[in-house]
Length: 146
Image (tube, rainbow, N blue to C red; front, side, top):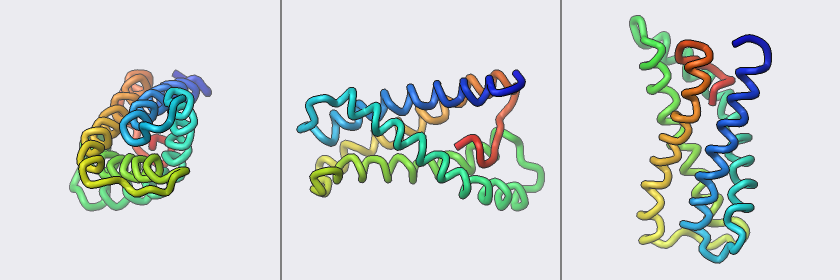
């Protein structure tokens, strides 16, 4: 695919995946939010924006990892950079979900319940990249693909 189509596809798939997953997170973490689906849409947009911001870090990480490995595969490079960054991103998201607007920290039992949500978010993020992998016939890495 050429032109803006891969970018548009990427943004639509990512936003839909993030909004859906954040809706579930709002239900899990903030049970007091009645309109969890609408809240999830807003949090999904925030998560998409966070991905762009972390893209700057990704650009540097890809370079460091690429130099450290003798001849890294695209898939290996993708996993070694994106999975740790996405764990951090989803960890930040759950922290924000729990604190905004109430500023009440997660309780211990609640914090243990969100670990699977964070890991699921990492999986969702990676699965949402699949249409782009297919369109580009490979694993793109770099700033744009966070």
